Image (cartoon, rainbow, N blue to C red):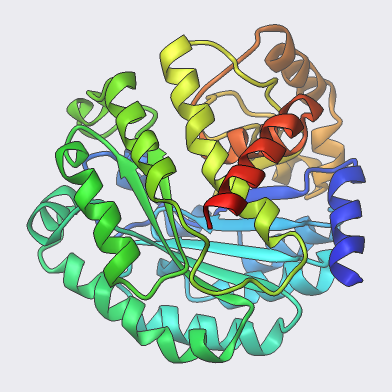
Length: 360
């Protein structure tokens, strides 16, 4: 019953139900395809939002359905579990996702143990970035041995994964010029060899550290998505909540919409960025999305009231601009929210759900 109540809150909440929180710009890798590299190169831990500031921000928000913690490398912060606990207790957080490069294995394990213990009614997903096979992955990330570290980190979470139905271990891959030739083999490897629950495919985006990373055509990405359609199977473990299959369908539809956006070079579904999903930067700036370099303002200037900031004159103006300009991009979080919150997308969701149900 609680899951259905949370779902209703998600749809009716006047505040964004999905927040991406860049907890730090610090990172222990230098990825060629990173769109956040300028912030990473100029990271300043002293300016980051403190845990007390995070608590004040959380207090100003309503129900938060999904919280994504990212960076930089989020595990560079040693208070990540405290951040998770704050949103769990104050905002009835239902689903937490943490994106990591996998280098800091011990911190990842300790975080997962603590969060699963202190937030028992919340689902937790740790998503590891795996772009390629060992030689190429290490080169792309600029860290010798990082591929082996990722595999060790994935393996270290298996005992927890076996005991907790609300815990997922996933892989996320950004398709770029550097890994495109091996993507099909990599997808097979992740699906058949790694003990993970899902493999999320994104297309590289933004102003990447190395411009060549973006040299992938819509036709190349379409081949990857078509292969995903053919090989997609249900996740290895049955998720323990009623809308699990719906979420899985959205996970499959999201890269398909990204592909259509690349090919048609226009908005496919009206963008909900800034309304259903927001981005909180490590220094307090709030954005409608990761790629649009337009800020609603800094939450510190609004006495940490997210509600006052999001309903400010500047924020309202920017939201109207997103609608009137028919702003579009291939940012996966925005695309998935556009699918969920658009009634026009539901016939497509149902068709996809039925096709996958028959297939499996």
